[in-house]
Image (cartoon, rainbow, N blue to C red; front, side, top):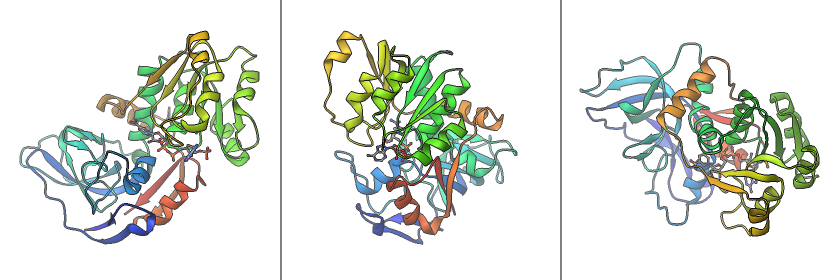
Length: 325
Ligand SMILES: NC(=O)c1ccc[n+]([C@@H]2O[C@H](COP(=O)([O-])OP(=O)(O)OC[C@H]3O[C@@H](n4cnc5c(N)ncnc54)[C@H](OP(=O)(O)O)[C@@H]3O)[C@@H](O)[C@H]2O)c1
């Protein structure tokens, strides 16, 4: 098969589109012919290298996958070749695209228990754009964050994958959304997508503006997976008893904090990691029924993975970037 292979950790010049042996599969696995694979920031971290998390090189990343069953293991009765599927990349053996070979290739091996059938009306691009971003956002906002209708949520990094998923899920649940993004053009797009307000953090102090927009009461919840310099200003946006939820730290994992906000306002800082199979199934069902609509910012042929990852690194996109083998 053909695959976009990370030959060694570092810059995008280490990605080579080349031949790779077809994956072996066991009795409880299926082989999926990949029709679309969406990028996540994790793909950048896997290529660049993460401290304390070695990835064996050469490697194929990509955990957000949709395609057709190409073959099934001897023990698999639930699926047949040709069926349209997506999947939960968190397997019992590790995460597909981070610990197991991923879907930025023509074929990928997947344990059958992680495979989720998708209906005909759900196209491969939107199916691939759903599991990680929407599964993560469902767990972060609903399971961990306990978001309620009528609350106000501030979403940082709102233009990216998990960001747009958070905006859309909050709106679906009846919350008001203040979206924060890095340019006026991204803010305009977020208002079209359904945010009630959008703050361009390249020209506006988002902390002061969110405080003003909340009627100087503070927001109920702040979604912050950027960390770095955005962390303390995010604490400052919250009302007494407010919740900050986090699932990552794109801009830095060891930010300065300010404990005064945490004790004086009795804030809750809630971590959220990953998603369950149920989260991914619910996310795909919401997308199939039209309640959630992933935004595809750009599509690339698989052999242009380096250009796609460069676009993500430059933050010059809105929504999900999808690769087509
Ligand atoms: N724990 C988990 O299970 C889990 C699951 C999924 C994702 N995550 C984490 O969640 C974060 C977002 O993932 P994603 O796939 O949605 O990423 P993404 O699509 O690249 O979006 C990230 C957004 O954050 C904003 N941003 C702010 N500061 C940034 C910086 N210094 N560098 C890059 N972007 C910055 C950018 O928007 P603007 O340019 O508009 O500011 C960008 O669009 C990542 O840290 C990822 O590792 C964690």
